[in-house]
Image 1 (cartoon, helix red, strand yellow):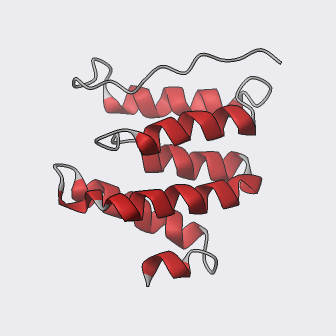
Image 2: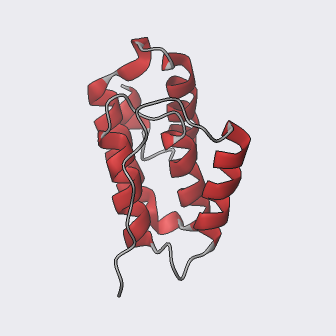
Length: 116
């Protein structure tokens, strides 16, 4: 199958308003024929590995789980990567923590080990 190019997350403030980014992400994830689980894993993996972790990373992970619950193992791995990096003290630390907590809640009981 064809490779979908995945752009690197922007380092400058986005030119697109946050609600529009959320709407676009949701629309993309609904297109399951194009945005397969494999494509989502690559895209979210790139976000998780970015420094700093982009603002919508965990929201995107939550949406991905809603559209494809079989991504639970990948989601746990992504959350573990984020925990090891401990980005909570950064500029958007509170937002990242809230997103992390929501993802972890969705994955209970498997995510409990990440919280200990």
